[in-house]
Image (cartoon, rainbow, N blue to C red):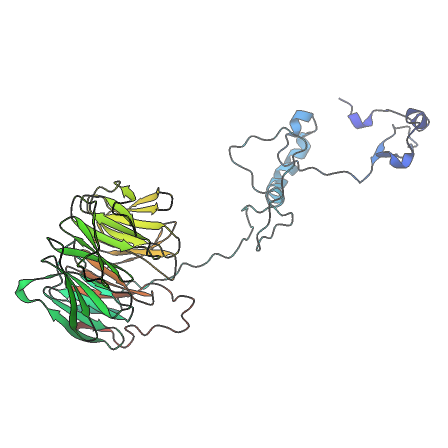
Amino acid sequence: MKQDIFEKEIITPRDFPSAYPSLPSSSLPFSLAAPSHDGHNLRLEKRSRWFIPNRSGSNFVLFDFSNSPASDQGKEDRSITYQSLLRATLFGPDKPGTPASRNIFRYKTETKRSLHSLRPLGYDESGPGISHSPVKAPRKVPTSPYKVLDAPGLEDDFYLNLVDWSSNNVLAVGLESCIYLWNACGNKVSKLCDFGISDGICSVGWAQCGTHLAVGTNNGQVQIWDASNCRRVRTMEGHRSRVGVLAWSSSLLSSGSHDNSILQIDIRARDDFASKLVGHKNEVCGLKWSYDDRELASGGNENRLLVWNQHSAQPVLKHCEHTAAVKAIAWSPHRHGLLASGGGATDRCIRFWDTTTNTHLSCLDTGSQISNLVWSKNINELVSTHGSSQDHIIVWRYPTMSKLATLTGHTTRVLCLAISPDGQKIVTGSGDETLCFWRLFPASKSQSTDSKIGSSSFGRTTIR
């Protein structure tokens, strides 16, 4: 049987000073033990000031240090579970597919522990039985509308934008040739105007002040109405066909038309429009200014998404990745230059863009036509409304794009979407001639009290 290498007689006490004449005994790494009376060889006692390496990945078989007699096999089997848990706790779980290290000394850079880590040695990977920070419960979103309004005459047309919610908490709705105003605080409905049989309503859009409403008509006009006095203050010509979408930027109003053009209207000037933007090859159905009022995103029925700046007559960015009409457009209020766009029935995708770097960030196939997008101001989430074949509303977390809630309250495709001024609620309109109000988002940090929007009334009423 092979003799243990530590039991070989290397030196004797008498030979030790001559073997190391220049070293004091206190500086030697070993101390001498007295010889035994039975004549066995002298053993060396190791001092305790040695660095203890991490040998969790070492293969001791290569160094012939592993002795596994059959009598010890049972003991090793019984302790293997304990050894595995201890090794995982001290050094982290084994990496699958990583070959064992052949180094005796294997050093690691210490990983900074999280606040809730329970590991004694600073290693901070997930392991069995180790508790990290508490898992936050997902936010619950009510899946039923808190209020429903009947809206007879709400057209089932994908390219129209017939609902908008003002900063003064008044909802404007275009029903056939009439515009109705619903005051959310008082739950009162009033008629703003009636165009009769000579014209129809194709789009509505509140100015940021919340007192004036822009109206796009079927004959190509853009009108400005004073909502508090129920009177028209201005009419602009310039489009040759219906005006299906409107977007405000301070005193500048942008209008998109079936004639493929976008008019920039300065309501302070006498001219009908300040400039005309030509870039789309089909009807302009999506239009949205960024929150800093520096960029205008437009979507067309020719499947293109264009981005314009304040002073350009030509688009500064062009994106052709969508395969259907781009009506749904939303700018993020949480990140500068982050733009979301949604495609129609043959596309069904939400795409995200960074306009500061002209980068396509990601794409998500939702499985159905996307008619509208809106980003929450209070939390980094967004809402999409859908047409065939789902006819529902989805709340998404960004950037993971995991579904937080799916809302089903309409019986036909959801074509209209607006968000309340406090950012907590949305209203959706459908071809089933109903308006549904949903509580979706938490209050912003600056809001100390709950909003009174719609709190005085529940159930189902009629908007006219």
